[in-house]
Length: 304
Ligand code: ACK
Image 1 (cartoon, protein in one colour):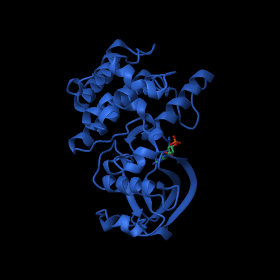
Image 2: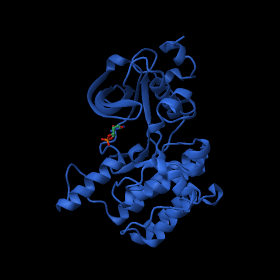
Image 3: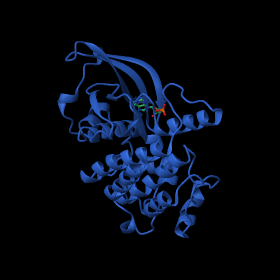
Image 4: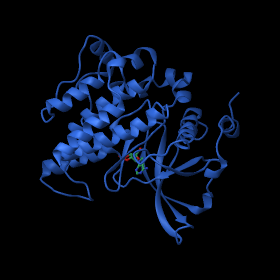
């Protein structure tokens, strides 16, 4: 028998302090649709801060009564309750006791890192210097984005949280071009949901996944490090799609035979070595986020 909303809701252990009065939330335009749900721009009145209006982002489901989407949203909410770091998206509240469930997170004015990179590439090609605060990505930006993502991921690894879907599309860029790790959608519960695995295999982000995740559905901090290597490649190529021209279904065998993406033209050998280290066959040989972060920090120091 199909579960109703409240039955699913009660499977989780939510802290009531996050519940937000739906009437005090003004929904605006759709910012975009993700794998499992959609994101809207919205406004809240901040009572504690002289009633000023704050722009926020609201995540919700696309389809009513879709158990996979609902589980994804509720598990993301559960995980977000536990996290607090400048490079991880911040939870502000939720309207979750009744339908439709909404989770309220901080608004990131530049959208996803992937969009930002692609827009900045267009600007560069057009010879423009600045549109809506988006600027061409410099060598320093490449290091700064990478360093910030490592700091956020290092924090998640410390609290034993495996992301499972780290990709430039799941990193958001806030005011001041601060990177925020987001989209904790593919959590244990959802990912191991049979329906999800069987029905939507095509949704699996194959090109970001380590060989052991592809083969055995194993997810660890070291599989996140592999994905980070792909994100580094996305940053350097200004938002290109990894393994250009290679169909996802061929990837596993290629990786097992030792194939890796080559060094992009504009990538220094030093940074390429870091990416390659993230793609070591043996997970134990991959660096930690802490070590990677330290490396990017020192490269940034040399750059400045
Ligand atoms: O690249 P985008 O414009 O930025 O398109 C995606 C889309 O929603 C689906 O994920 C945007 N988005 C997601 N979360 C936020 C947020 N907190 N602030 C601003 N935009 C967001 C994302």
